[in-house]
Length: 327
Image (cartoon, rainbow, N blue to C red):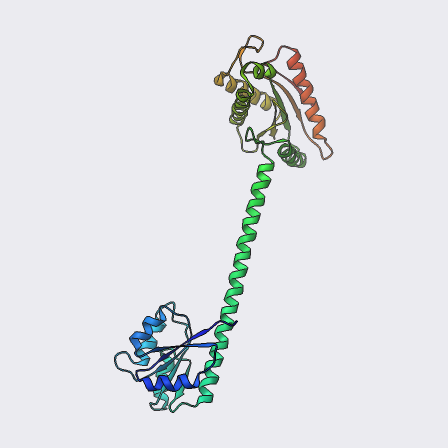
């Protein structure tokens, strides 16, 4: 079913309304009457008219004055106005109408065929404009929907790169970020250092204090390690159960050792009680450090394995310390 199109007829004489109503019998039209310019202005604030058929000579606001006011209002300034008049057809009068915003003139006595034809043109133009506006709105809604979907996708991707428990990178996140830094360091011939950390005697901690407390320790340790990193490009991820991997791009071995010391200091500040930790009394970590100048064909899994071997040595040597290798 087609949308009804509102047409405003403005005339101070009721018989003129009746004449136009008798001519404009199109079922698609919804004819609305105003007996004055003032009433027309009020109706225009509440309706969206396809065209206004307006008498020029009216008491109070005449047609020219009403049209001039309509052109100054944002909502109504683009409504087409056809002046319906019996006044002189002299150019001076016609030009005045066009100056105040008329799009056309109809002269009394009205020719029914011309009236129907002109109104039909503006009816179709209105419907076309509404169709275009609806399509534009639909496209805008689609764009908003796609934008929201993209944002949701980005959020899901971010979540999928994040370790749920600790809020730092998970293995997938580590792999993605590590590969990016490997390529950059290889391209610019920069060093890349890795630190793999493991909480000392963590099974003993869980057995003694419970897994809820153990999870809390993992969160605190993760944030402490993160806080020990000095630059935005440095990052830490959860590599395994109680294992963490720190990636330090553009960092030689001595820089990585500085970070390792800083991590130890952070954990000392935390001072998380751990009675079954080889007599240390608090939570500690062992670390393995590997530093390399990566190439395009460097396999980072091999470098991680080298760091892991250093971690094993630190564990075998009494824990709460680090061992390192430069490759």
